[in-house]
Each structure stands twice: as C-alpha cells, then as structure tokens.
Amino acid sequence: MPKPTSHSEPLSASPSEPIPASRLTVGSTHNASLAACYQCGKCSTGCPVASMADVLPHRIVRLVQLGLKRDPMGSEHIWNCTGCSTCSTRCPNQVPVAELMDHLKADALANLIPLGADAAKIAQFHVLFNKSVCKYGRQYELGTVRKLKSSRELLGQFKLGIKMLRRGKLRLRPTRIRDRKEVRELFRRAGMGK
Amino acid sequence: MTSFAYFPGCASEGSGREFADTMEVVIQALDHDLQEIPDWNCCGASSAHSVSEFLSLALPGRDLVKAEQMGLDVVAPCAACYSRLATAALELPRQRELEGEEPPDFRGGIKVVHPLKLLSTPEALAVVGSKLTRTLKDLPVVTYYGCLAVRPAAVTGVTGSELENPTMMDTVLELLGAEVIDWPHKTSCCGASQTLPKPLLARNLTLEIVDCAVASGAEAIVTGCPLCFLNLELQQVQAKTDGDREQQHIPVFYISELMALCMGIGDLKLAFENHLIPVDGPLDSRELTWR
Ligand code: SF4
Ligand code: SF4
Image 1: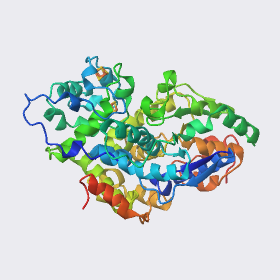
Image 2 (image 1 turned 120 degrees about the horizontal axis):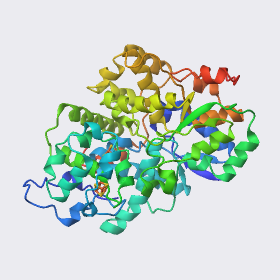
Image 3 (image 1 turned 90 degrees about the horizontal axis):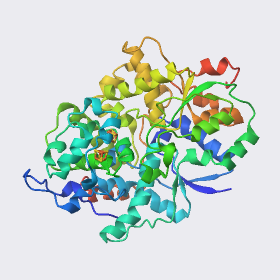
Image 4 (image 1 turned 60 degrees about the vertical axis):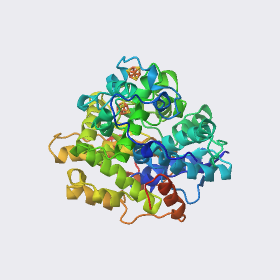
C-alpha cells in the first residue's frame, strides 16, 4: 500500500518558494507533470462549473506551476469541482487537472486553510461521508444526509424525504461490514481515524 | 460463461437498488456468473479522493485484494465505484514500482470491467437479440452516460470519438427497438455528489441536461449510473416543488431496466414503482405492460 503523503506534508508557506519539481507531478495515473501546461485554457472551457469559478482551472494549474499553491488551496473552485475529469481528458498535454483539484482539497484540509461558507459545506460533506465509511465500512446515506448543513435545502421538503424512504431509497439503518477494524486501520494510516 | 467478482456498491442497498437488481439479472441472462466480493467495503466514492490520496487507493485496494484472491475480474455497476476500483487497479501496482515502498497486496492480476462494456460486445448483443420477447416500438430516447463510465480515458480505456460521443448504450437500445436521438449532453456532468452539499450547483447542471433532452423530442432519458439517475429524478422533482420549472417530468430509465423489460426478466414492478417520476407515459402508450 502507498503511504499517506500529500495531506501530511506542510504547506509551502512562502509564495516565493517554488515547489520542487517532484511535487509538480500529481498522482501518477497520467504520469505527466503540470509543467507541460501551456495555458491554452481548454480545461476551463469544458469545465461544467467554470461559470461560478473564483479561480479557473487553467489558472490554478499556473499558480501551482509558479509555486503559489496557497492561493488555489483557499479557492472555492477546488470544492465546486465535481471530479468530472473533462479537463484532464481534453487537455492536449495530459496535464492531470482533475487530480490536482483533489490534491489541493486534501492539502487545504490538512493545513487547516480557512474556507468560505460554501466550500466549508462541501468539505463537511466529504468528511461526513468518510466518517460513515470509517464507522460502518459502507456508506450510510441517511446518516450522512441527516448531519449535513445543506440537507434542508435539498430534503427540507419533508415530502421528498418520505418518498425516498418509502421507496427504500434511503435506508433507516446502516449496513455494517464484518471486518470494520481493517477499514478503520486504513483511516488511521491516512491520519484520519483513531 | 465467464465468472466475475461482483462489487454491488453502497447505492445498491439504497438509492440505486433498482439499478443493481436489474443489472444483476441482465448480466446473468448473458450467461455470466456474479460472485459477490465477500465483506466488501465502500470504495470511497467522490469523498475519499477529495480528502486523501492514500484512502482513495487503500479503500478500493482492500476490495481488489479480495477479488484477486478469487482470481476473477471485477464488475461494478455504479460508475463511481467502477472508476475508483479501476483507478486503484491501475495505480496500486504502479505506485509500488514508482515509490519502492512495501509491495501492496494487490498485484494487478485482474481487471475492473464496466457493465456497459460487458453489455455491448457483439457476443452480448447477439445473446440479447436472441432473447428479446418484445421491443420498445420506436420509443424516442436520449442516452446519458455522464462522466465516469467514459472518463478519464487512462482509467476507462475509452478512446477516440467514444470519449465525447459514446455509443455503448445506443447500440443496445437500437437493438431493443428504441429511436435513439442524437443530442449534445451524453457526457455532460450532472453535478455528481454536489447534490448533497450544494444542491443548486447540481440543479443547474441537471436541468440543462433535462431541458435539452425534452427539447430534442425524447420521451425518456436512459442512463447507466445510479448517481446520474438520482440527480436526474431528484432535481426535476425538487425544481417543480420550488417553482423553478412548471411542468417537466421526463422519466428516467436505467439501461438495465429496459433490457430486462424487453427480455422479459427481472422484477420490473419492484423497479419501476421505486422511481420518483412515473414511467407509465412512455410505456403505457406503447402497451409495454410491466405491472
Ligand atoms: S488544457 Fe492542459 S495545457 Fe491547456 S490550460 Fe488546461 S492544463 Fe494547461
Ligand atoms: S474535474 Fe473539476 S475542474 Fe475539471 S472540468 Fe470537471 S469540474 Fe472542472
């Protein structure tokens, strides 16, 4: 198993301090470095949430190239990102843009970067989701939804929640796997569990 | 007959029950054997990779190790599960080489297969064709693939024009006798899990897809992903409640439901009665009974 890395590394605090070349490679799925980006903007053009972006994807790539990682780590866009991978897929230089968004989110959480209200709601969702998996080994949808700050906006309409429950689309009780210890150990190694 | 290690995914126990149920019977009707991975755990979906790269590989890694012990390729119906498992299957053996760490338990001896690929091979189509008990009688539909069944290419192995214009479901639906309408949103994003923490973000994306489907003349949207399905239904219903849309309920089907319907297999009453948007319109008008 790979060791947990990004989230435990300290933030490169000074904006003038460039990130070492090795850190420019984000995940090895595409095995390409961010340095290949020539700012064509294709990633941002196809991004479904670009219209609401505070920092556009290609600018995020640029900032990280320049070692100014702190700015995008505090941006809302990395949290709005749906993980659709349109950016990575269309990039002419195989820059792993979508994977970069994940790294920035993990780093933002690990370094306690202050988040805006919307970003904080999305971060809360991911944390709750993970807690549920850590606890049961499976995702307990109702348990997670109930604790969400945003759940009222969605399921506030009581009727919809009831409809979902009646159709068995929301289970009342979680399913637990047998070997929960093994899963909890993975969370512990990721620095996220006890 | 091929045997697969089966990863049902958490949605199969709740929001996407009818998908898993019908997908299982369809895959079995194609003469494949599904053996559930014992004590499988959640793949981490979109949340593990948002907080920790390690978890995003370690969670599906535990499942892959079990599948490798079974000696079987994995089938995971949910696009998100598929994507996480396939990414880990690619990454884990590679990370071992790159970082020279302790060897991960997963050796990379098995593959992760998306069911849409399984259902659309020439052999599968031949079997489906031979088992049809009725057709969809030119039902006009659009196919909606969403993101993770096709992207990222390095994970899915999808190439060329199929990346922007996939045809796996189209081929199946044409065989079932549907009229498959060309439209621009086959691989647009529905907003995925953002529906929960940021509902309006997902609603904007989903309604654009729905509006376009209606404008294209389709009577139904066909998808192969439980999260896409959930968003397409939930956001339509909620948009009407909130007064965002006056009247616009286009039914959504899983590809596996329509296959089961035309092959005369599975419990479709259980599946269709679970839909938030009634399916009677397009089916009753063509005397495609399911009750
Ligand atoms: S598409 Fe690729 S090369 Fe173009 S701006 Fe985006 S990351 Fe850079
Ligand atoms: S993965 Fe994120 S950044 Fe890339 S196109 Fe999709 S939403 Fe935009």
